[in-house]
Amino acid sequence: MKHTDERPSAPALPTREPVRLVDRHGRRVGHSSFTAPDPARLVELHRAMLIGRRFNQQAGTLARQGRLAVYPSSTGQEAAQVGGVLALSDRDWLFPTYRDSVALVAHGVDPVQTLTLFRGDWHCGYDPHRYRCAPQCTPLATNASHAVGLTYAARRKGRDVAALAMMGDGATSEGDAHEAYNFAAVWNTPVVFLVQNNHWAISVPLRQQTAAPTLAHKAVGYGMKGYHVDGNDAAAVHAVVSHALAEARAGGGPALVEAVTYRVDAHTNADAPQRYRDPAEVEHWKERDPLIRSERLIRDEGLIGDAEETERVLAAFGAEADGIADTVRERLAGEDELDPRSLFTDVYATVPPLLEQERAALADELREV
Image (cartoon, rainbow, N blue to C red):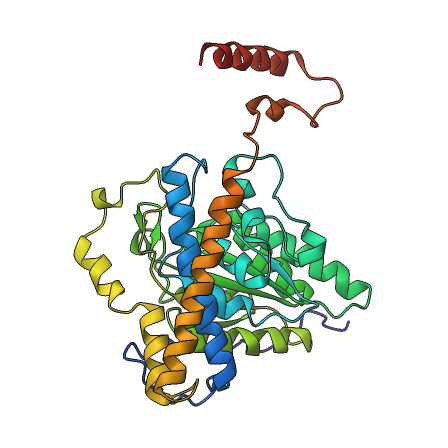
């Protein structure tokens, strides 16, 4: 009887030292497997991060003003999000989580539509097919299985499509992540799982949720390749994710990329991080700000031009970021107030008795406000 349980050779273990191509002082770092993107792409990464940082600031302000119900900031994580999403081709799909608004903006989604979810609306705000971008997923890791399913179906139809599924370190402890990793590896689907390890799953530190040497090591157990990368180095994230996506498109299978970064702000505007983390830790990571190292690289190597031209272009980037923030603020101010009673529409043809009671109770409360 022929033995049919032959297994492929095990993928190599990821390195404990993260892949880094630009250090925190803006100096290039040599690497045996990866090289930094060309100057034009490095400048584009910086521009997108600058817009993302300003967008985060504006969205946080809108949340404090009550214009948004909640906003999960990704300040400090811009390099991981921008570096990953700019590696996608026009054919690929993005599967973001609730913290990946900067990734959506860098992907080309309308910034105002990006915030629709956080206004409490019943839809995601944008057309997923137009942008090849799934709705932002709030339940942890559920977007990972969606990415596997879409790419599996696309491959069966002969379509050249890969996907980038984004998640946080806390999501890797969810059963949905396990199922997605396993199906992706068994079916050899072209998915890259980009894990943003920002060190905190709300208030739970990474050390209390995993004993793995790195989160990238988990990939090997599923038969996937794992990459451990400095998530505050946009050049490194872009190079590694580009490589992983290219391999996945070529039939080399899925991969897990762990981008080590840090969530500088609170989990959301409803969080009080001073109750569970040391301010000195935050200051440590602020010194490793991805925008600072990127700007230093651009200035020190003259990637834009001479000093005068560099100042002019960087100032234009800043003005563009401010303009986007201004537009977001003005357009949201003109949006109609959402009706909380819409929670009960467009779900059931015949509303069940219990929901009828809840709808009536909500209506009573609204009359009292």
